[in-house]
Length: 204
Image (cartoon, rainbow, N blue to C red; front, side, top):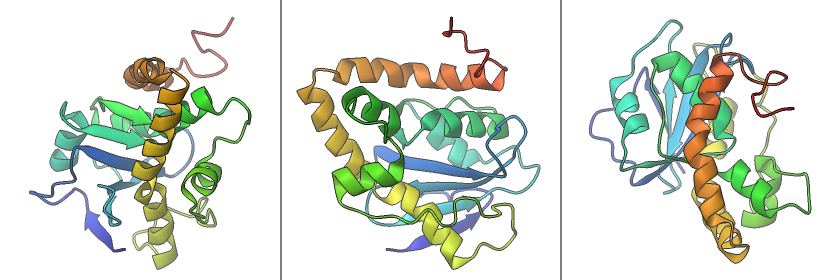
């Protein structure tokens, strides 16, 4: 496994395949307030590509092209947050998307454990550390531990997607999942506009 670190944007000509796992690290959990610091991507080949985003940066042309490419599926875990963070930073709508958290909630109704760590343990047989989850992602220099943590959030998403797809097909919920995924960019936009909990339009 290799972690490739870039500044401000992906390099030109990098091909990450038809399904790209993506995650983000921010300064906090409110995408309207807390700036985007890092974008992690993987094609599922065991390597991670990490892009540091500068404070105040509003453009990353190669990354933006990837996010909006209609021929590439962007694969997330809890994509609602990441899609909102990316839209706030760069003003683009990320689609089409696939979300392992939504898929897990649709088929794993026997448990309330839908976090990435639990899913990777139970469905993929991989144990990832969450020790760096709350570290300072705005630091100019990222530690090796931070880079390894960031990479772990995307390295195994393709395998998790495959396992969850099999469950969705078995439970006859794949079409329902696809419709949820299609709505996800709109759900993220609503969050940015202030219609998150407790003002969710779909609450009573």
